[in-house]
Image (cartoon, rainbow, N blue to C red; front, side, top):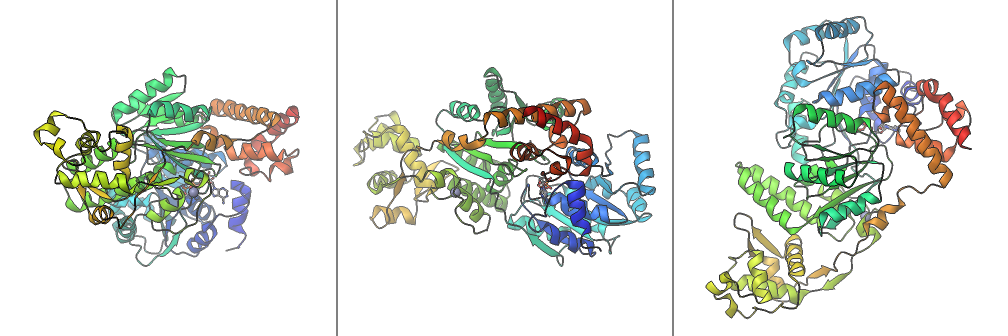
Length: 595
Ligand code: ADP
Ligand code: ZN
């Protein structure tokens, strides 16, 4: 292989100057006929690892992907830069499908996207055996694992099929770093001896922020007001909440659309499409809106409710900023949600092992939310990677002030002790506040030494302290009964051997943190808007997503570098030969008019 070929393709077809991270090594490895397992975070650039070999190989590259929508997006984007890629879906007309097979037979197609169901179809395997297949790429490979929420049983059958093609390299790709999932991928996809390429999961263009919930809707509006006219996702934990928040935002004149499993298929499809096509859509969704959201220009992912699993949180927040531009991950969380989510896991998961796994993953989210160290560092640590402080997240930017509240902790802990660990947080607070509720009277808890001991502290502050005691592991909660329980650390704190430090009530002003969003001069802003509306007009005419015409990053570079010639345009991120031919003259005209 000519060593410059892949770099040439990267530059001339994709319009990018250099490879990122392990891309080049992976491409070379595959080009030499080897299989590999690629673990790379969302937005890391996995697709190029099989798209570039596909363009160099003589035969066909098959890409297995779990969702039609995902395939469509990739095929549109590839066709847009002049690459002949196609996808097979049962929704296509018969003669369309026939045409696809004919083009493959005539060696016109370089990449064919299919679902796993298609690959395990006998007729299709026969067909593949009659042509030259150069590479199998198995995208979203974590779908093979029953640990995740995207489990697809058909993925587990792929290995049997791929055994018919022992000499064809296979590439499994995923962004799910969870240890158990990795083991499943290697096992089920027959990759035990394949080389592994692990990239860092650091997403250094994402600014991580966590808010304690305190009038969630108001906090959401305050965030949105600093991010007008950009694309974002707001996750809620229930369908009802999705509907309520969408309605609330529409009333506030935001272009919000809902997505959850309870909506008719047609509405879901239309809303997904609207989101993909526009550069300012706000998608309010449950986690049903997940797999295959492959949009580069999502500027924020806002968890209106607390996520239930640290790995899914990483995936969800990772949908922001895939194009490398600064983007935000925000979580709004409260004690009530922690209790509810734990309860839900206890009630719904019958398999003991899976229950423990889910509880552990939730515990990690709680730890992340209530932490006062760098969020990026902690998030990566929870996923098994060591990194440095990011200098950008809320905790780095605005370190929380800690106050020694060991005495307060001792009052709470000894109340838990006196009620023999048989009460929930509400009852403990009633006792500490000195409230003579019926329950307090029935159990004669008004006779305890701690009764009324915290009358001068607000209920909200007591609730917050109990939450932080829990997330910092000074107490446990029996989630079946919601009773607060003591552990070794509680005892040590009660004896005065371990101190409890409480972060001062969140003074984090994330609005200030996120205001640095786009610092452009008036003229630059004007040019930016002109280019955005030019992009929208072409996208609307061609009925394709805005970002397939030009990425936000391309527009941002045009605005800062202000090239004046066609050659100058070629140095801009995302502008290759094809785009230059299509858009070059128009862009230069817009740029020169703006001066
Ligand atoms: P993943 O599948 O890993 O989530 P993608 O393959 O969709 O990520 O790539 C994410 C974004 O990064 C895309 O917009 C893609 O065009 C861009 N990209 C990928 N590789 C490079 C590169 N070498 N240089 C610049 N941009 C790149
Ligand atoms: Zn940080």
